Image (cartoon, rainbow, N blue to C red):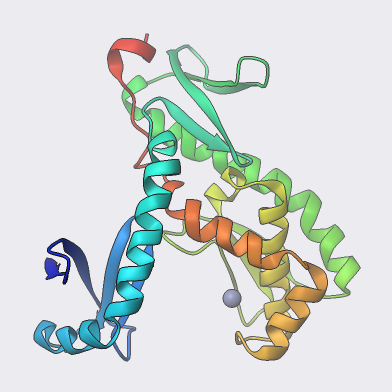
Length: 246
Ligand SMILES: [Zn+2]
């Protein structure tokens, strides 16, 4: 559900409300998609207004920040017939063929997917992302792990909804299949983040100290994920039939 918050300047802000079984207390998140409140399942929406009041300055400030960001970047990133790969936007072309494969052309700034069933093109795109991510993790993970002297068990590529990575008790690392959409230094940051979880399970001070040592620019890389992360999604890929589907 969505509630509207009236601002002192006469404008209104939309706050999307999501119930979560895992949430212990309500929280408000601002990102490029807008404002979202995550509340425990037994929490009353009316009680949320108190939190909104308390945080009204922050809500206003961050909404304005993301609104500016949205108008500047999101338009480009949400354009039809485009796809993000290694941090760059490419034109996307879907062509019906007898075999499924993808061709990345740096010169044309275009990724062409040859697909056997045009209606299922999103499945092909997902598989392609998944393969590309696996290839990258397969090369970068052992290198970074030996540099940091951290031993992991195995890695898996997962269809995560919102997480970029996770680390299990058995020292298995999981990575989001869409991670190859991110720039390579951001991918390295996610690898570092999950590897450090092998030795520090919480986001403690020590955790971030270790991450910083391994990746001094980790704050920028987190920012990339916060800003663009939610724009990287298969669902969001849309095609304008007239121009690109043949
Ligand atoms: Zn973490």
